Length: 105
Figure: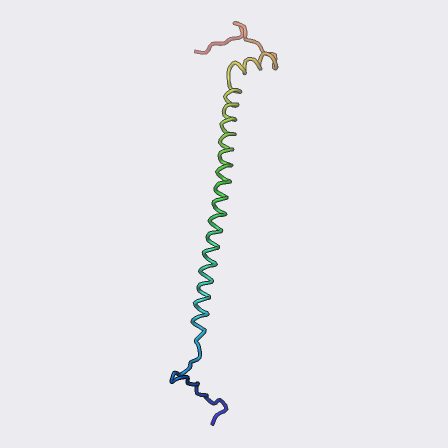
């Protein structure tokens, strides 16, 4: 006989005991673990993206308010009354005399 002898499995009440097959169980548990980890990872990613979207929405709202404020300031700076006042007071300019005006047809 060879070195590796095959032992017969014991019988209890006429039933043959068989060695449990653990490979399918471990494979099932591994797949379950991978799917569970993927689900948790995806939920965490979704929550982080929601925080990012909220933060960027707030930033966008702030930028829109600043843009509106800058538009109002630009409109104020372009007003003819202000430009004339600055020209007279700060730059010392005055209205031209009739001799200085040249009309082009």
